[in-house]
Image (tube, rainbow, N blue to C red):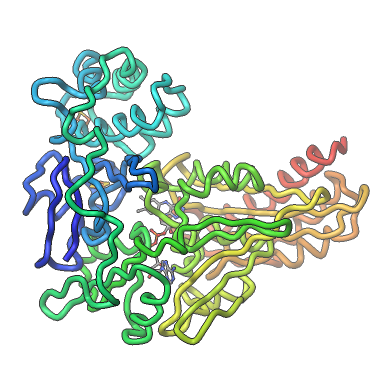
Length: 478
Ligand SMILES: Cc1cc2nc3c(=O)[nH]c(=O)nc-3n(C[C@H](O)[C@H](O)[C@H](O)COP(=O)(O)OP(=O)(O)OC[C@H]3O[C@@H](n4cnc5c(N)ncnc54)[C@H](O)[C@@H]3O)c2cc1C
Ligand code: FES
Ligand code: FES
């Protein structure tokens, strides 16, 4: 059984297909028809809904997510609001009224998703007017094909001029339901079983490890922003799914003098402030990953565990010399991130194991980190090339360069020849201009829809020079 609060009403669901997405449920069972299906791939935002979780003080923060790739089972213990729940009778939510008054909707297909994203922006701004950057960020995952964005952005700027939804409005009063959503579900039993397929929702790592010991080939579900597409676009059915969303220890970020440790379930959204503090160029990269909705769901652990050669964070973890913790009922082991990637979409994870955390050494005063993503669009696009470089200097000499790229090989890969050409050289642009010629020894990329092999090599070589410019600038070298 799972329990969640839909538009202010707690609902219990016992008999459903574990592979059901929130979108499928909303459109076929809950009849919340504002939740539209456009692309079914997390790209267009037509299916956006608000999902909230109660914190320890009982307050709920709502974030916009894509219902088309989010698992219904991952709603257990959470709050969900669709556009049907936003207005209070005839009183429209400020995001809705502003869109009406600024003519922000023509055919209307995208409109519920846009209202959802604007409502999330409205409630997360704490009454402050959103900046242009905030508005663009909030709408980064919403495609409107016919109205054009100018009136939508004007509506976003005007939302705060409307009367706030009154406290008794059905959903925004942070309803407290008739059960404690944090109350544990018994043991590690299957929460849902349907036609022989099972969904488990462990409450802690002990339960997780014992479920995985029993079902070593189970599919682990984190944010689902990769896996959800296997359901929505390839119509895959999973025999045993294990959702990690209730394993609180995997969502923790901790740090000491040497490193920052990210639990595997830390989302891009949750990691942003810590990354901003310790690795600002990594934090900047987040704005180029997916869209607001994807960043609200997708996890750092999922980006690493999927073993993809085009995941954006692994090259950064390579450059930072990160380690991963891998756990199972047999215990915990630690592996250097480079040894975790074994081949195209192959990782070091063995049956019954899960990724527990990513441990990232902090930068010293002599080190600087530079991250560059090259893709055809600013948002919602996969990298043609991603380069991350940590440059350590000793006075005016490059002591150690650690450079890694995504999109250039079957796995994220270090640029060893380029690094060797830089190590021990003067920290000046000429060293990088010379070393960049080694890139073609480091990589033999393929040609695909994103870029040709020649383009990738040229871009990567240019990014070495850009790294030189940035690191010289950082070190105050002319
Ligand atoms: C529209 C869209 C845009 C995107 N844009 C980008 C982008 O710009 N850059 C980018 O890098 N990616 C992008 N992605 C891909 C995806 O969002 C990321 O890879 C994300 O980090 C995956 O995390 P998740 O939590 O959603 O993983 P999930 O989909 O839940 O899982 C991914 C894989 O990892 C496994 N897994 C997850 N967590 C664990 C764990 N703790 N232990 C063991 N195995 C685990 C799962 O079993 C699965 O095989 C995009 C996806 C979409 C749909
Ligand atoms: S339907 Fe397009 S993002 Fe979900
Ligand atoms: S109003 Fe038609 S797609 Fe936006």
